[in-house]
Length: 207
Image (cartoon, rainbow, N blue to C red; front, side, top):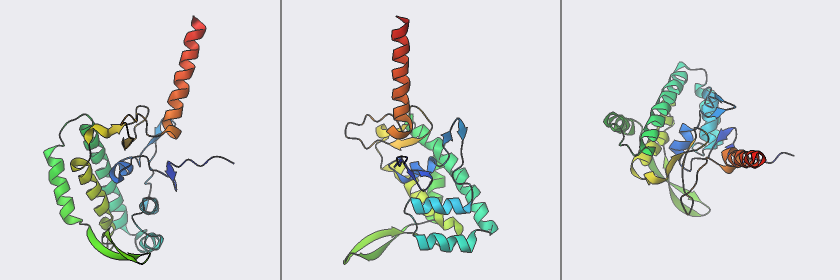
């Protein structure tokens, strides 16, 4: 029986340690080719469920309500465009550049248009505050993504915001010593170590 790779959750990669980075990572390169993991409305809802942003019941209801509506397709295209803009911003931040002024202006507009709100929920006999967002229209799904994007700009230690040394995935390094180099050991770390070992063997054989 093949071992389960914990970096994949219901067909999606979660290696970023931060929601906006996991969102950017929904278009990885696999076997040398870019792969669109948010291929349609159903896949988008599955990603939101895998990211624990909606419940199973909410995912199914949103699927039934919007899957064949043009608004859902239009929003999916908008979200993919925002993802690539966010990828460019993350690359700037990793290079220690300031985010573009237009990026901040656009994020402020989106934060106003797609707010999160607090809700009290009773869990295991106690009340907890949880962030929620409206689920009336397809573009309401933008709310947690935009908030997570703002968090990248404001709250993260940029010295720990990185792109994997071996692929295009991004992550926030939460390791104790801050020396993480790969998106994950299972995906790129082991491959890099095997390649380095093979190169050392070739060098020894040439001696």
